[in-house]
Image (cartoon, rainbow, N blue to C red; front, top):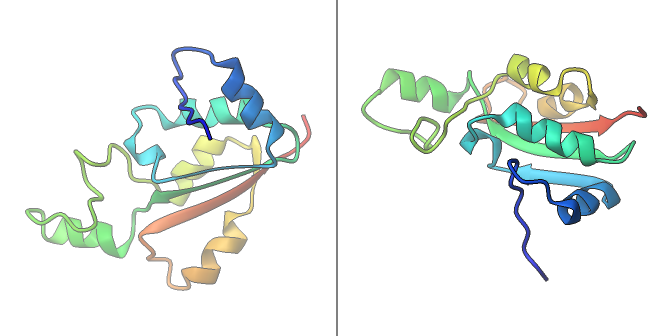
Length: 131
C-alpha cells in the first residue's frame, strides 16, 4: 500500500482521483494542526463526488479540557493548546468551515456521546449534496 499526502500548494491528480472515487473521506487529529483548515476542507470538498461523506474530529471549545487549560494555564491538559494545536473549534466555527457546502449531520450525532455538551472533541459527519 502506497502512502500519499496532500500538499495544498501543489496539485496532485492521483490524490484527487483517490478522494473522488471513495464514498467516505475521513481525517482525525488533522485540522487543529493546520494554519488554514478551511483551505483543506475546501480541497477535500472540491474533489469529493456527490453524496460522498466527510468525517473528521477536532478538539472543541468549550470543553472540560479547554476549561482546565484556562484554569491552570501553566499545565497543558490533553495538548489542546499551542504549539501542538494551532486551532481549537466550536460548533459555530465548524459551521463556518463547512459554509453550507455539506449537509452536516453532527447535530444528531454529537449528542449521542456528549449529552452535557462538554466533550473534548467534535465529531463531524457531513454529506456532500448534489451540485
